[in-house]
Amino acid sequence: MPSIEPARVARGGRVPADRYRADAFRELEAQRLWPRVWQLVGREAQVAEPGDWLTHDVGPLSMLVVRQRSGELRAFHNACPHRGNRLADGCGSTRQIVCGFHRWAFDLDGRLLSAPEREDFPPFEDAALGLVPVAVDTWGGFVFACADREAPPLRSWLAGIDAELAPYRFEDMACFLRRRLHLPANWKTCLDAFQEVYHVRGVHPQLLPGLKTADSTFAFWGPHSLMVNPNGDPALRGRGGPEDPEVLAGHARARARAGGLDVSQLDERRVTANYQYHLFPNVSFNTHATGCQLFRFLPHPTQTQACVLEVWFMERHGTDAPPPGEAGTLEIDLQGTRFSASLADVVPPPGARSFGQDLVETYALALDQDFARIPEIQRGLRSPAVHELLLSSQEQRILHWNLVLDGLLAGLDLDPALRARCAD
Image (cartoon, rainbow, N blue to C red; front, side, top):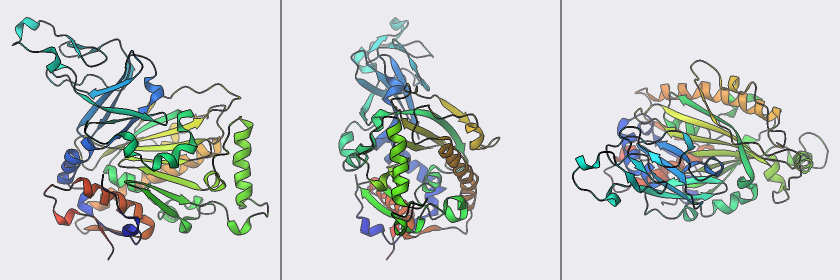
């Protein structure tokens, strides 16, 4: 993986607009991005028992993860080797994988079990027509897969940021809410809105009293990154008011203790500031003392200026309540409703210590504001007057991840006019 020196992006730079609107660039991503990187597929809890399966679609790829009878996970291209029919969609449980078109059957490990009326085929070896495997691994309760079986191991992919994230104990969390949204915008247009807080004054003015956007700091681990936005005012430390960082931290720690949750591994800043991470290429998330809000941005399989966005709310559960079950996915049509309407009846799990009703309502309003604006950004990007995006130091994470993407596209006949570049 290409690694970008943080100093190169600290002053901002420029990104060509055609990366967000040109079909040719979407094809480059299909060839050189999605098949070569580790993808966050889902949660281990979704494939907990033998025979449980889960699919993941990204660009032209579809992958099928299956829990084996031995307890390990295996993953395959989600396509029947006979005529290419998709084998599964969503999640479920099965004793064997059966193609719904011609009823070819495969064991959980991908071996061909049977092909109806086999005598009508030319001779073939079973081993040559088993399911085609892809790499699969787990970390922090998450399942990852990569179509490139020669790719570095997942631990190498996460090197550095895995230690940074370990104190949050994602493996102890459950996803209690999942929403799947369709937006008329390129997946990168959508992602970029979650990579900076420069837009807060224009889109989320209600957040400004607490969120110190001008004091943001940044960190990078290979292709991955972090933005920290302080809450509270260090000048008011020890004064006992609502802007006192000690007071903010004390409230968060008290809530966790009330549920029997240990957050001693998190320093004051981690329980008061907004920590916003990016796992390259398409996952962004905000962490809290005992919870997390995660976004997964997925390209439309055929349309450049459309995407799918998944929103997950996750929480560690306290000892004073039973653990919540893993939530199913609810599809939301933003043409007919607001995101917040899908949360109207959502009640956080009884043991939740970060996601109270107030945090759900805060996210609901902020995401409504984002989802109203993102399609308008994409509409503007279609204008022939817009040739490139000019990025400030506050938007340096957008430049960083675009430069990483350029590194993956190396070796292709990429028009120099399509390359991201740093400020002089």
